[in-house]
Amino acid sequence: MLLVALIDPRKRWWSFTAWRYRDPDAVEPSDAAYSAERMGWVVGALAIFALTGGLVAFVHHQSADQHRADQAAQASASVPAQASGGGDMATANDITQKILQLSFKQDRRPRTLAGQVAASVEPGATVTFPTDPDFVSLTLADGKTFCLNLPPDAPTKAPGPADPIVSIPGPCP
Image (cartoon, rainbow, N blue to C red; front, side):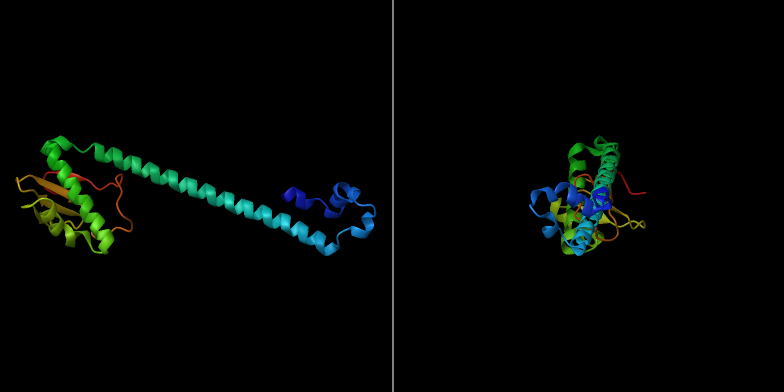
């Protein structure tokens, strides 16, 4: 498009369009029309460059997000789920996800919802708050302890299945 804009529009008109008319001098576009056509080609080329750049940036951002999600999934897969029993681990992960989803929906801090959610999902479960603000200690009704990785503030988006939020068997560090 920029190459077309660089070519003299008058010569282009005489080469490709003038032959269609019996009297091409009478219908030849004005200088203003030639200038407008040239500007149209330049603006079109710039718009395509901008859209292509935006698309490239979007694809790069998406691939970076996917890479981070894959790393998080690998990290959570490396957590030994069998150390405290698969069912207990699933319950702890379920509680963690519900805490984060509720904190996102209600715009509240996850730590303020932790006790309510734990008791509603697992009757008899208790939550304690260690000194580290990023972790919450969850004790299930059967006495098994898990460390929940909860950010102190509400998340900016609803947590997804690949988010790096994991329940770790055992007490919090």
